[in-house]
Length: 172
Image 1 (cartoon, rainbow, N blue to C red):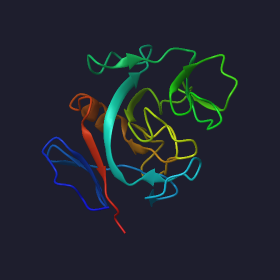
Image 2 (cartoon, rainbow, N blue to C red):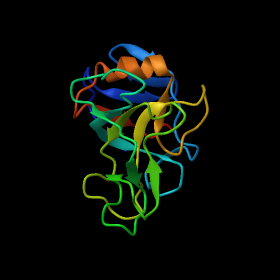
Image 3 (cartoon, rainbow, N blue to C red):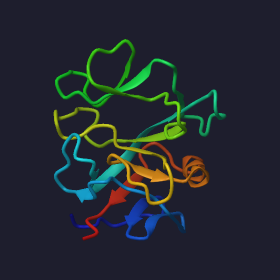
Image 4 (tube, rainbow, N blue to C red):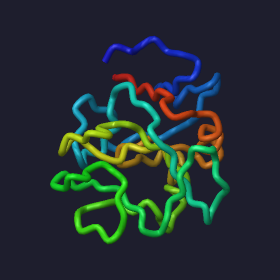
């Protein structure tokens, strides 16, 4: 992928972390590394220019981080089943296809920025649920998402807007 011209509001992944608004924020990426051929379940973070399409938060654990953030409720899920017509979208329980719970017991999804990877018109098998969320600990890989410490994630959430670009270049 040729790296596009970058603007001051772009979030740009580098080998040292994510660069945004003059700051370099440590982050974790997928256990499968970076991929130009992202597939469901490969654990890779997709290379490309993505846009922030939404923000979710746990209202029982924090105040609304931005006016456009949507609350995560007890029955909120994310479909990761490529057999379902609602693949790679937010769905509600009960849901009989494979899915990921958005309201988790741990704090990883207390605040989530949704990337437009394979969304809104998902191609089955191309990968789902590429989020920006809280990491488990420094350096611990994700299932394909980009993860930050809690303070940096909240700092990002207060400054991004819908449509902000997240640039993930091929760093090989």
